[in-house]
Length: 317
Image (cartoon, rainbow, N blue to C red; front, side):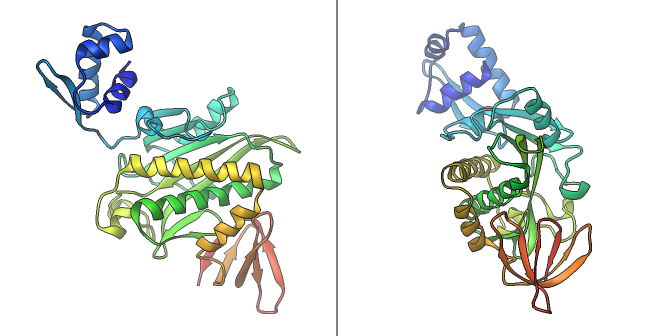
């Protein structure tokens, strides 16, 4: 009931009387009062005035379901949000829900992760209340070999959102990092559940260092606060990321992958640079010259041969 109460308060300008809330929500005045106290306990500052009622003075910057869903206006992504104060990993929780049939677009958000992870088994540092940590369930009509496209799509969405909200020159490093001034601010992880010829579902995990102090970050990482010198609303940025994901996912379904590739190229920090790529096979050096139609990185070696790689760690030189 607290969700309904906060949504009603947010939808009204000024005060809302307890009687009006009781009637609109079909609950008792005592239930209204109880919900107001619960919201105050969550960090909402709610003012009460005799004969006027209640109004919101301020809201906590926490990734509550009702905060992320409020006026999001998306088609698929974020229509339903699960919130956890603490979770081992939003990826694990999303997988668990997806296996049980949770619908496409569902988001699992958390204030902190005790076992947050990135690619290749790396740990993703998740200081409580400092960053954005969420995973999205998608059920795309793609084959398993096409799934790398969703990682690039997510990179475009996050990069655009950061540029819009924080007004910084964010860039995408192939395949899954978003950089600010050459330092990592975002990690993206895509995992899937599939048969040989079709994807049952995939989960895209996104971690963004928003207000995280530098001392709590790994070497060569940064945060929006560090780069801009000011705090940023995690709710506002998370909502913008969800909106951009929704837009680009719709473009992918309606127009295919070419528009995603073209936008990715305009935001890339990798193309045109000398790079060193290390994967399970070997180490490769050369100039990153293009992406192929599946999102593979095309690297031209010193001998002039162009080699494609679909995965690996890239160091930009």
